[in-house]
Length: 385
Image (cartoon, rainbow, N blue to C red; front, top):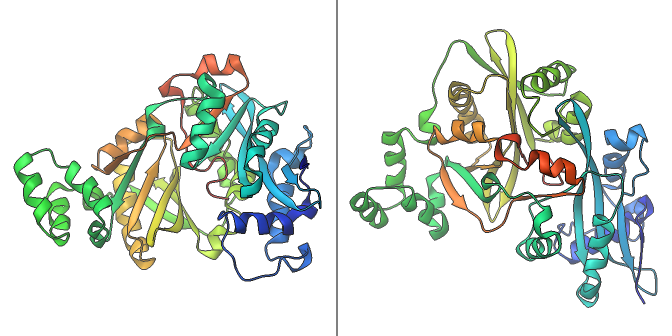
């Protein structure tokens, strides 16, 4: 009879093999018979040891749970990542779900692992990012009215740099849907994708909306400095009534780790003259053979469109150098969505929220269950880990 127990650092090799078997990780051709010969073992441990919640030691934190068979082989997992949020001067503890995988013969035990995650104490909310279609159906059925449902979590925006992506019928559909005039819509439906760039240029859409403003300066960062502490204090003073993940220097170092040096992310400070007023964070991935820049986070003390259009002007050349084809935008506060709307991004409606927030703190849910409070980003959960 399979048993569930808390995961430990010594489980890494078994977990890695499980995740490869179930398509969560790529097979890099290693043996993974022990932790010592498993690449990434130290980095995996560090991802927990350097987490600000675990470092503080205020709560006893399980790193996750594993399902083991009669021979003590790991056949299922559900990992548990702590995170903190700020709202009206208080801190709230969140638990991020990650690495939910079950071997096929043991799928009838899936809900037992989810139950361990859901029933944990001392947390105010559960967070799961980028759920698969089957996963979201399970979450919706189990948590019902306990999860947050706002429009920003059901809509993706994207900007295009390489118009050859419109050879895909999926992306072509989004371009055609973006045109209001029926006659023009029919015309472009018959034209090659090379004409789409001309249309966007005429309409000043996306990267063609980029502007130059001598007062605005964008500076790429190579490390997380203590400037984030000052910026974080200013953000919480300015947006005290927003529920947002904590972004001080310690948390940002934990979120980003070595991604700035290995090229899988880039961080850009935004200045108005000499005053630091915000930052933008991008992660880079290949999704279905398309090079994608994910607009992971945008924080601004002054939320005006000119800062975004200047950012796009600067980022265009960087994205081109990385052969980025699409910039994907998910989540964000409604005021920032208005800024994104000002550059006419392409839109994609999805049938389930891209981020699940499930509340165990009912009083908190009642207080913040309104759109204007939320600033969700993919910095939360496991989307960027």
